[in-house]
Amino acid sequence: MGKSDKSTLVIIEDDKGLQNQMRWSFDTHEVVLAGDRASAVKSIVDHQPAVVTLDLGLPPDPANASEGLAALDEILALAPHTKVIVVTGNDDHSVALQAIASGAYDFCQKPVDIELLKLIVSRAENLAALEQENRELQKKTTGDGPFSQIIGSSPEINQVLRTAEKVAASDASILILGESGTGKELVAQALHQASSRHDQPMVAINCAAIPGELLESELFGYEKGAFTGATKTTAGKVERADGGTLFLDEIGDMPIALQSKILRFLEARVFERIGGREEINVDVRIICATHQDIQGLISEQQFREDLYYRIGEIEIVIPPLRDRGSDIPVIARSFLNQFARQQKSDIRGFTDDALQALGNHRWPGNIRELKNTIKRATIMCDGKRISATDLGLENDATAEHPALNYDLKQVRADAERTAVNNALNSTDGKISAAADLLGVTRPTLYALMEKLEITK
Image (cartoon, rainbow, N blue to C red; front, side, top):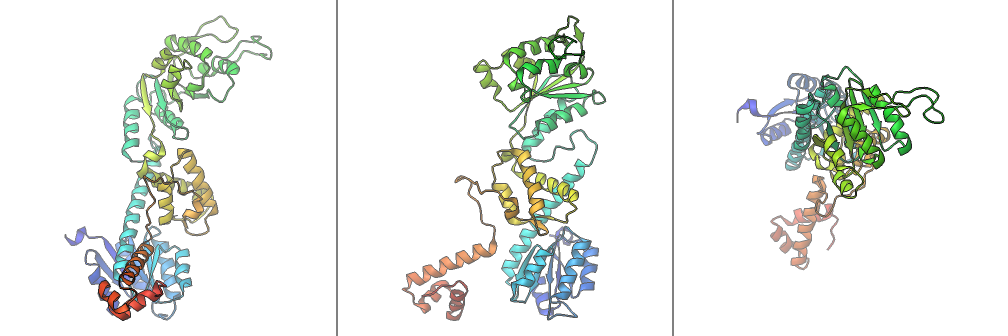
């Protein structure tokens, strides 16, 4: 692998011996060394690394963390997306926690466990790559393209976008299917904006939100005196959509009695206002949407089959959010950016446990639920990154999809505890024999037992 193919890792450390050890340990990286705050800042500007390790005990105050914390602030001010892993020799966790609160990604205490540090660096690089991909996708949403507000790159949503882009320019009637909260109206708006009718109105009506006896007058309008309270002639949604697009949302909830009138209108694009005798011709493109099982409604004689074929010349099925796994953090980040700007917050992202919680949740409310969750978490978050606690999600991972523990320190401690206990049990608690089984010295085994709080 050539040097140009290696990712850059900036190591900020004043101890020459540790510098050399870390440089050789990270031979898969292009390592840049810095020994003080000034050279560290220059390295960040010159190399723009995704990940940095930062010793908090830097000159001229190596005995304390003040210089390292100041360097951390400067680094994040220059490169807010860089993942900073702080290294501290201070046994007091308060310094490390202060660094995390200031925006550091993670910490590692001296003496440095190189293998553990490698794992933390690898995890930070993976997260940095994901966030960079998110930012690139976000750039697309700032454009003027009709489909720019539909965020995601999963195969499932890409299929939706490919279909929508193909049919947008036609006048075919489109039926959008999907669970509540999946973004059906957003797709309908994009279809209208991508059509030749984009400079004409898109008129929407929610068939589930209006009582059946009023829905007909909302759609077709009425003449003066047509019924009590009809004090003037009023145009309906259909008439106001002339030249543009009529969006019938939740058409599956339309009363069966009204469906025959809608069918007649769709066949001829002609209707009469309630109480009127004059036929009115309109030129509209029809887009419908529903979360209902249309085929089930047809079998129950709650929806006309001939109407279904009329409105569903093209069907677009939007997948639920739980089936768009790779899109979840992308969409969450988009909402975070939106709400952080609104609230003038400096929240920079999500912790690992938050990303895990986002992936584990089943999202029955789909994107609408995710949006509300991120808004609430942005308000509740006290740090620089949203945590799983801030999200307030229940762990609803199923037995078929168990939650994984990504806490490397905890995983390692659990594995060590299991191995030590097994060795001690196999040797009836004899330290020398257990040490031999584990391949360590007696002092090392005693130290492990003390660290893991194992007594025999």
